[in-house]
Image 1 (cartoon, rainbow, N blue to C red):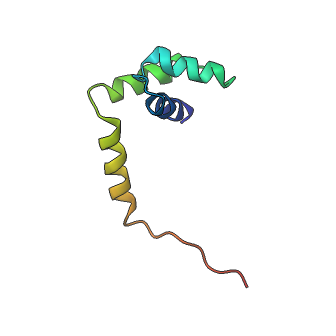
Image 2 (cartoon, helix red, strand yellow):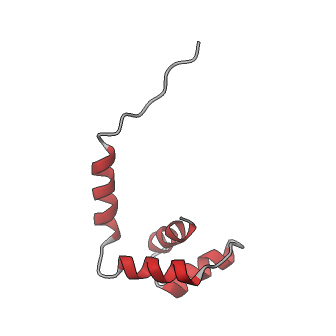
Length: 72
């Protein structure tokens, strides 16, 4: 999951989100770099637009009940 967060940070920062970009973010944060997870993520993201994926995810979340009960 940390790899996805690093990818999103790359995209926000105007980077392509390549494996090297993701690795650099993780190293800068002092996180452990898992090359296999980065490779899998970049492979899954190949040819996909991050904004479209986020929009589709938000569309799915609209039907999830959210909110908390008030405290007594």
